Image (cartoon, rainbow, N blue to C red; front, side):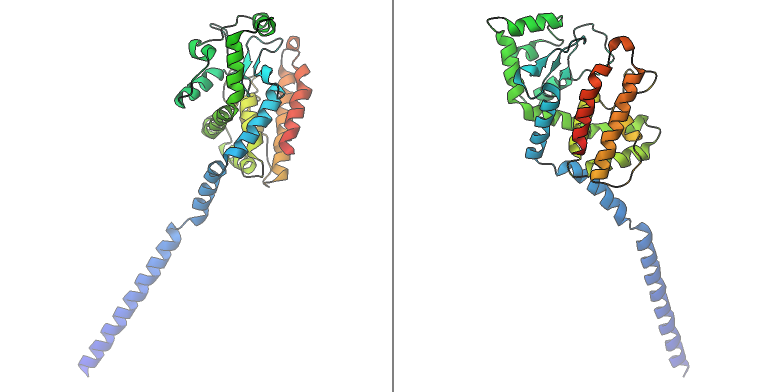
Length: 289
């Protein structure tokens, strides 16, 4: 009888221990499992990983139209009233040596990107660290003389034939932009949320890629009027919505116009920046289409 009681007690203790172990294991599993966060991070990265070359090339053609009107000869251009030429589909800024400028220069970075791809560069790009033209008039004279300048022709043809590499360069800039913006933003979570809200919307990468090339990340402290910037950071900080899709793109478009209007309001009236505003608004309207 004693043996039977002892055996029964041992069985009860064993079962009790097994049940406790199972409960602890289940509890720990619930505490350590965070599938929603992992899924969210993966989904955000997929926004960039899943874009195809054909989609990126189509965005490149839109940027080419926005910046150069889709006109080949305007891939090498110097705007009236500016102290620098603008080159390529993104009208990348290229300063003269010693030229002070508040706007971020991007053409030298494009040259380095192309070198990393082992692309044979045209003479002007290969031999000049700074813009070789001293004035708008000099560039226009070289472009319009009876016998066209062969080096400028070579440069123009190169930029036209390599639009795909240029949009890839801008795309890489966008990929790196979020970290730069988060480092200086006072509302990091909203910037991250709005960035991916737009990026994950259908056709949402186009406005982000175009705007970061158009007006920069918004992190350069020199790019300020009255202490207020006009880059991608400022556009995202001004957004408050939560829905993706059409509403996200519309809000991005409207926020960009608000930031650009504020820039003009803060600018030196003698620069007459309001002359650009309608064209800027037309461009922003394409973000919501």
